Image (cartoon, rainbow, N blue to C red; front, side, top):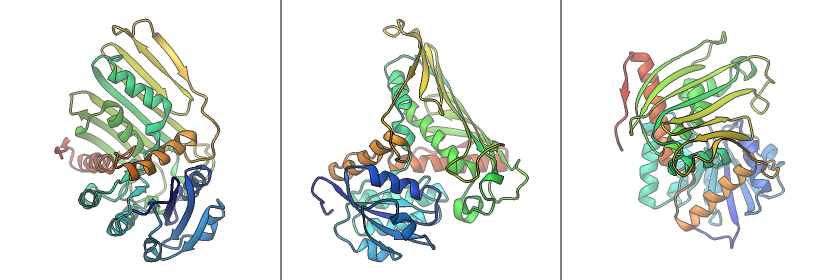
Length: 359
């Protein structure tokens, strides 16, 4: 991999995507980024993206032209789910690791193949699960590790957002051939990842019901209810849906009702995801003095996607491409998220519990 001294030269690949402008804002504010080379595919407006930062050194609509640049350290990929494996594989072929928009493919098998190719090339690949760097997620994971919760018995997740009518029912996110699935691929995936990340366990069984409750006719699910079993025996639930009325139109002003909780034999953590804090209760030895605490955070202001935590997430990935360390959300995590989503869709269609095999 070419080195750009202590800072990074990034190749940004985008199709029309709700998050592409947000990622450009992150690249703009991150001091570790020296310059950005932008590639637009599937009709993407590269001039619009380039207007977000003066760090843009070139624009192109040719992926081959972008990947011919030897000075690029790594790729940031914000493309449709059906296009993503092709872009990742092309980058791997020229020795470029990628940090890609979740979930990364239509199905787990598609992304698993890319994962194996990347491993054979020794490249660091990561998924855009920036919520892993949210302070309350970090602290809850460490509290669980430290015994504050005792044995976790159950995990609860909720990711509810604005109804389909506010989000353009004709958008590619609602087309099965381009997105793979619906609310689970777009937003539920974040909570599936966080549940596994905080537990440090895979999900091994999935029972689910998915369907369409909004009046708009779309090709993918707008509502999903999952019950899962983790490999250590804990049970979990996830409620995901496009359900909220009264939201702003589009994807940057959407309304959310989002929540995570871990409940164990010695304590619990409750995380309303729209708030800057969370509640931790413990009566475990060494933690008993805590009782119930509400812990809040005031991170520095940032226009990056995901705020200051989003800056850290991207920089951690870029540093990993040089050190060979694991990405903050490695491609393996995205493969497992897709395994859970695939299992949920199958469970709903068949009425059966679906088991997920160990890798």
